[in-house]
Image (cartoon, rainbow, N blue to C red; front, side, top):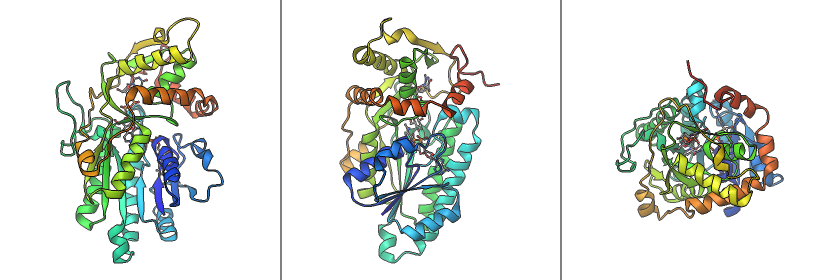
Length: 359
Ligand code: NAD
Ligand code: DAU
């Protein structure tokens, strides 16, 4: 059995669903169910005895130790994190608590459990830490893509907290020989993504006739990866990654934010045309994100050549598949955009859809 943390969020839930489609190995899912954790993401697993959801915090050492000793997982995959850059700018505290202190406590509970295992179990055990390309900082237009040896230069409270967690994971291997693996992935998109992030936010706004707020000049570049490809990359690293190594995972799909929003509007124009004309008419340029990283790009040569992993989705087809999923899951969107989500929009976007001045 494996233990997954944060498995009710966007990527974690996609990973859990994919895992149980491709494996019979049971899975414990430890999730604090913050605003980003969603029971609806896992509803198709109702009654599936291979999946056990435990509501709790990775920073709760007593709970984590109890789970480890009770279920004796052969691996832990740590997705749990505060994940939204804009929220980290408004309030960094939760990011330090979960991403730094939470990861530290999880590592310590894991180390204590791992030490108690037999020599054979110890050598096959893995702690896989899911991280981000944002730890490498920001690239200029002509810079080469991030490799696993690019120095860390995190720029936001979110990326700094993820960088700190990566360093802790690395140190627990170097000092205590804990068998760790780290993955640093680019921007994901796909089903079950909370609509505070670019693609589902723009989609939700377009479908509700709200302006589409593009920060700055819209020329910031991200490398987009379909979430199912991220899940398969993690499975591959878990299976065959070399202990102590990090692996970059990326889609080789660099797009500016404006290109992404144009692509999304054009697809919607085809799939669900609006009587007043193209959804592009809703685009508005708004105040930039403070410290906004200009460009991310991933060099995924290592995972490709060492482990034979490549993404299966190209951006255009993956985006269409994603939009079709959201259009056919309007009940999921309706539930996720009530309550806490509305509060976030009011905090972050003013009536003119300008991100609030941070004073
Ligand atoms: P998400 O915000 O959608 O989900 C995070 C999940 O973690 C939620 O279910 C939440 O309830 C849970 N959680 C938060 N704090 C917790 C705690 N203290 N204890 C237990 N559970 C807790 O995030 P996501 O987009 O699915 O990202 C998952 C992981 O992948 C994160 O570590 C993130 O840094 C990383 N990542 C994300 C992307 C992306 O594009 N979204 C890209 C690369 C890496
Ligand atoms: O690169 C991996 C990272 O990708 C992950 O580690 C993070 O968890 C994930 O949230 C994501 O971070 P980004 O900041 O790149 O994602 P976000 O969807 O918030 O923004 C994508 C780009 O779109 C970014 O340049 C900011 C811009 N943007 C975003 C929003 C929400 C806008 O222009 N307008 C918006 O309203």
